[in-house]
Length: 326
Image (cartoon, rainbow, N blue to C red; front, side, top):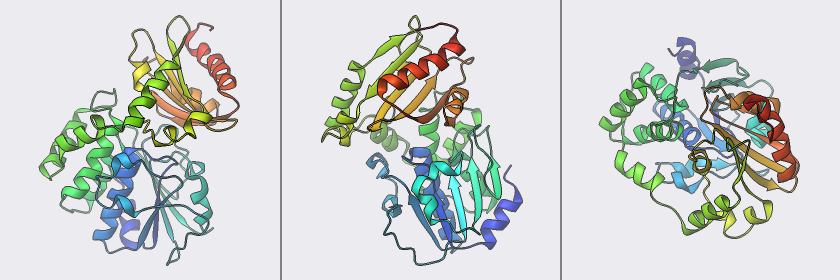
């Protein structure tokens, strides 16, 4: 249940900065835009700022272009008083957006990660929610506002992304109930499915082939690695690849229980996405050891080193959970 204190603070406050983690996914983008919709209805002043460019995959969402990318030259025409974070386990995940925060800012933290550090003045962390947009759906209902097509699509996008099209283990009966309400409110269920999962650029399809060529199976077939090196990511084709959902391809291999998708975003710096389909292997715990976090079956971190270094480190940590070396 949404705490009444959260409603009170949003209703009384103004001059909001809305933000989410670096490389925002569909739940983060949908959640920020849904909060934007609510603040618009309440006649509040706000700006949405994130550290990195959101994927064009979500450009079908109304007001997608209102998401501002942080830059040193960014000028905001009001003094920020409130920070409202969506899908963020800790403030460090805002990256350079932290530079915009005054010392006396009030922080409202809305999330569903078990790794959340409760960094806000107000923390609403619902581990039972399948997505952050499900939480925001409840918040909007608390204000008694009827849904329209735009906000229904914001919320539905987060719902469908974070449940993996309603197939992940976090998919609850309520997720279907909320989806039905969003459909009734005008969310284009068929269009969104077609656009998100059956529409790709040629660079993305070629990139998937390159990624699968890097497949490396370990631990008697129970652990899989795939990776993109920095040279590819900086290439003309690599810079256009949408990697959303790529990690699920090696996870679909029979007997594979854990996958690490490695992206060398900078020389000597690797972004790690971890997935598990074994209830006994909590990848959030593994990511936390390495400075990251997330959920039991989906987590991530960033590690200094080469692809080979990071593989070795992950094998050491994951072998402790699986009980097999190499």
